[in-house]
Length: 335
Image 1 (tube, rainbow, N blue to C red):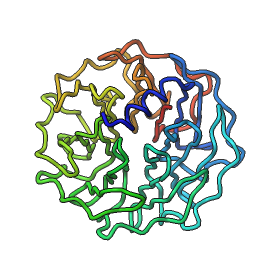
Image 2 (cartoon, rainbow, N blue to C red):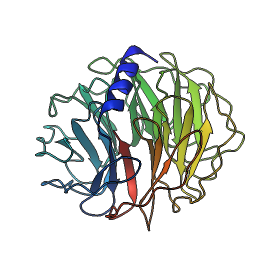
Image 3 (cartoon, rainbow, N blue to C red):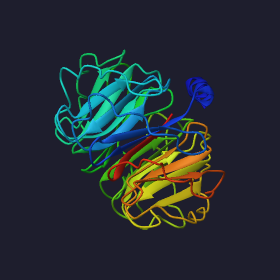
């Protein structure tokens, strides 16, 4: 793992831990302490997200939280210190339409929002608030941005999108570099989410057509696509995450069991057994806890979020939070 990733992982391990769920109905975001289960829900932010929250992300030091929303200004951010602070000013140039996903770079000096209208990705300097929007990439993603991720070194950025080749990647250094070549074997249909492994040596894209997940070696560009897992997810891939050790990969999907998980070692191992208590149908998002000991799946009713111990497989489902999110869990983030 690059040194920045090691430092960030070690730093996160000593922080108090939290979980955030972006969801369908007001207040659109629910946050909780996390300690092998949910604590008491934090108070809602004084200024709520403006609409359905499709993505949520904590900054790596845990001091800020950002959301992507389907209502103008399409993104919103807050200081975080065991609860929401006063909302930061919205960006002067907001994303062009529905915010679908949001990510901070590992250093916490930039923020990216994938969205529905051209240019499909908007990025900003970050320093306790949005700076002036960076220039668009010279070669835009060709369709709706559904997912965005930085690699652990902060030197590359990936956008999963609705139009072939379904993934666009760029060098990143306080702005976009020249787009990398597309993968020789692109994902089979529109990309819904993307993630780099912690070492920065692989990239994964969940997508809407079988095999529902595509993975590639990564070294400042795509290598030859890895073989599909022997047991592929059974429906539309909606989210993807590697655990902090880089030894497992999880894909949320739209049909029960709503999540598929595999060992990862430069390719897929044999699928782990499904959890004994599966999330409700329509898994929308997935995330591992900062220390890798838990996994959460944003999902449909009645729970909207399902969480489990993780140790090379699922443990017994944690109790639901006493105060549930108020709608489908479209975004999930731990810190």
